[in-house]
Image (cartoon, rainbow, N blue to C red; front, side, top):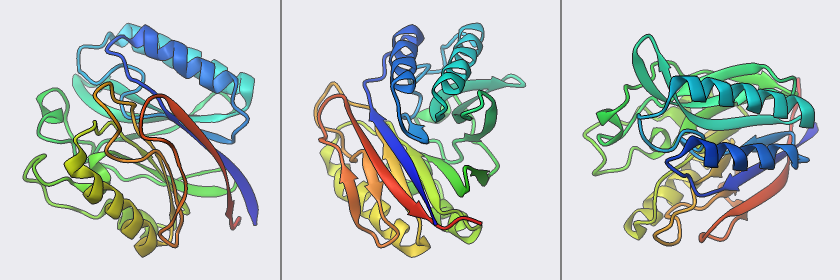
Length: 242
């Protein structure tokens, strides 16, 4: 068994990359966690109008900060490859290298105005744990956000042997979605016997409609941040190691 310290950041996401980068670097450089999770599109802002040059420069700065602080960061970002735009979680290891990426597989109908879906559900191994990443609608496929089938990605990751799912979110504050979002987190963690660590973007319009925190494999919230404003959590997970 091993103890892994995870941290999640509920931060406001600006349309301006430079504002977000300053916050992300500050959190990484002050972190004592093994893994730190940021919200969906927390680096570039939630849009497709980002500068590729600025994004790649920011990635280099984040990698250097991770190496300096010996922390693995999972950062929400926009990404362009081969002329296509993706919503991505980019994983920067504690060695300052890119451990891997996850591209949002089930973008909402609004997302698809500027991005295309990812195609691969990956599993990563680092610091003795097996984990996967999901981005917002990947996990719950919210009704009303597009006529897309639910491939039950959490269940697929559980079948692949992951112990932890890092779930980056930018879901807003529309309260009608809260029961659906949070019951999905609880039931899917329970079904697949995985920890789900979430980090939502703080909303300027009110309390977020899905909590930032950690759900246990037994379907219980282990820690949950206040829903309003900029918040963080740190929690120690006990997992089996190979």
